[in-house]
Image (cartoon, rainbow, N blue to C red; front, side, top):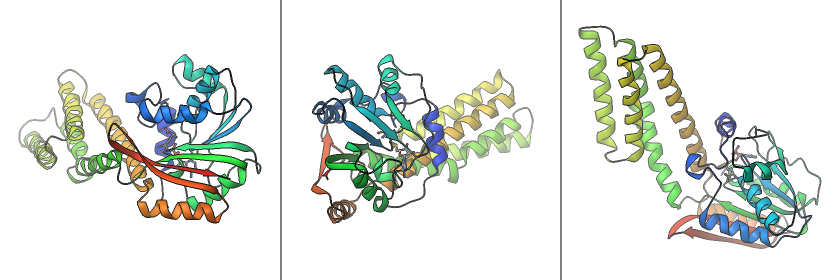
Amino acid sequence: MGFRMIQQHWDEFWQQGYITTFGLPLVNNYTGKLRELWEEIFSNLDSGTELLDLATGNGAIPCIAYSTLKKANKFANICAIDRAKIPASIPASPEINEAREHIHFFGDSSCEELIFPDNKFDLITSQFGIEYSEWKQSLPEAHRVLKPGGECHFFCHCDRSALIISTQSDLEVYESALEEMKIFEHAINFTKNFQSIGETKLACTTTLNNAVNCLQAKHKGHDLCQIIVNETSQQLKRLNSTSAELVRESLETIRKSFRAAQGRQKDMLSAALSKKDVTYISQFARDIGFDKVKAVDFSQDGDLVGVYISLTK
Ligand SMILES: C[S@@+](CC[C@H](N)C(=O)[O-])C[C@H]1O[C@@H](n2cnc3c(N)ncnc32)[C@H](O)[C@@H]1O
């Protein structure tokens, strides 16, 4: 708990218009067990409920709140904050666009200093969000802006989840590809010498091949390793028909997006809660006046997804 994030990764990610943290695979918002759990929580709300979502990103969770309530002909007043810059509109489905239009988004706004008056909200939610903040400040802030009798529902990453374990191995691949084997430096160097002849070209080709072979040997069969190698070689194949400068630009863009994904995954790993963190947070919540403190693991299809923390004021 407590780490330094590079905010720019998140600003850029949300500007790309994704609705969830997982990008293209979840282009129409969360599905499955997680979504059902949220729908269950939101279906119990009354019209006029004051709801706040913390570290909301582009508003996946408040969009589920809006849609669940709308189906029952009910409407809540929904606020959503994130420390990142949040775009006013994104290219999304009509359902998501309608929901987003009814949510009051506050970008550049942190969990540690909530911009709302005391006792405003009936419900505070966060999914894979509040654990990125400093609990020592964000939890008292959540308590302050919550009405007496109000509830917090937080779904958080935990360090034993399937996602966090696969993130750890992805980070090892990024580290090898980007920092250790310097695949992109060697690929860019290859484009610069593509037209040359003789020893210079041979040396560049050998260096690049060695780096790729080392990467593949170290991470045999790893999907991310194969993606990095495939994307790089696809670009290099374009050298036969496209200018070297354009290929270099594409390689730089791909490298930038891998670096950004690496940054977001590092944040996720640092945010994930250990069992000790959960014990600490539960005790701290009681100390600052929360009642009915509950923290349980939750799973989907047999895989541990994270820890669910619910608190009542
Ligand atoms: C993994 S994303 C979660 C987004 C969304 N809740 C979801 O489930 O898709 C984490 C978000 O936390 C935000 N964040 C990190 N630290 C924060 C803080 N101290 N206050 C507010 N937002 C923060 C980041 O900008 C990022 O958008």
